[in-house]
Image 1 (cartoon, rainbow, N blue to C red):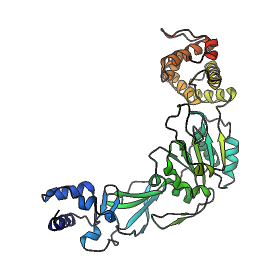
Image 2 (cartoon, rainbow, N blue to C red; image 1 turned 180 degrees about the vertical axis):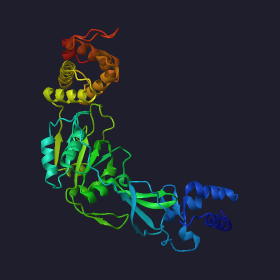
Image 3 (cartoon, one colour; image 1 turned 90 degrees about the horizontal axis):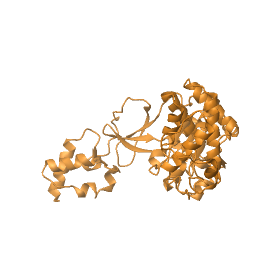
Image 4 (tube, one colour; image 1 turned 135 degrees about the vertical axis):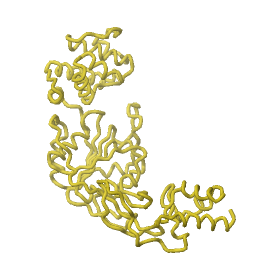
Amino acid sequence: MKMIDRENLINTLQSQDNGTGVFTRKAIIEAAASIGLGFPAWLINGKPEVKVERGIYNLTTMFGGPALASSQPNLPQAAPLAVVQTAPAPAILTQAILNVSVDNLVPNKDETFVPFGFYKDLKTVLSSSMFYPIFISGLSGNGKTTMVEQVCANLKREAIRVNISIETDEDDLIGGNTLVDGNVVYREGPVLTAMKRGAVLILDEVDRGSNKLMCLQAILEGKPYFNKKTGDTITPAPGFNLVATANTKGRGSDDGKFISANILDEAFLERFAITVEQEYPTMATEKKIVMKKMERVNILDEDFATHLVTWSDVIRKTYYEGAIDELISTRRLEHIVNAYAVFKDKTKAVQLCVNRFDDDTKEAFIDLYAKVDPSVELAEGVTETTEQEIHTDGEI
């Protein structure tokens, strides 16, 4: 592209500037096309110093003047974002720092929750206000995350839950630049918000993350954190703590049940003070849970509750023996209770909630439930499977 064409493009963009000097990739390409030019690779790909983030460019320095520092960006008024300060950043316009301004982050109490397992010890840790990172692993649907939230609710402690995935990165956790109404702003992440508020940070499904979680190394040591993007140093407020939940211990899943679980870095895992193995509740505790769930939806039926927990217990024991590959979680029992509340039919509730399994497993589970609860009728086409076959065969 000739120098005169480049100058024409810059002049065109400057004439379209809204006072920020910030343009999207699409806007730059459209401006070039409006004056008969092709793709401006020399600007989009050849000027890394003007790139704010992917697809966003600050052209202030190319407009013949210094970076704008006097104009206050026009920020959206919707909660929970609020302007708390402005801070200049190199080679881009003044950044507004956005952070959470929610009055109360204490989780709501769940009246159906029944404490069990690590609940008492976790309450002791969080009551101490000591920084003591905890890693909680356990099979799906056994109440790991709910337990943490309900301890916080009981202690009236603020909690911020972040669901981790393979895409979670430093910007998601710590914070990063983003575009709001044409202005580049720094949006504070949940980690720094929890540190400032002395809240409990819950990293849910942490074993779904990648090596991008290594940005938490210093934070897992409980030390002040220097935010390289703003130049601020954040000192954790008293009470700040970090609890991670996962289906594995960060070593991946050899049996393929948790195919998206990743192997986490040893240095990351080593920074957790303790690792807790959360089991499913005992039959007595699980019956209390099921009864409370039934009471909430106005279908209290103690016999049904007894049959459900007996059924799930037999299946879990068989699973632990390695005879089957699936089990019934506490969460799935709650799904059955809710289905029963909707359809008022025990058999249908059980059938609908085990439909997610393969056909052989589904039929075996339904057949076993019919043996546990004589009041239900087998659906047409469901084959008989003896309890002996459930326990001894390698497959259902």
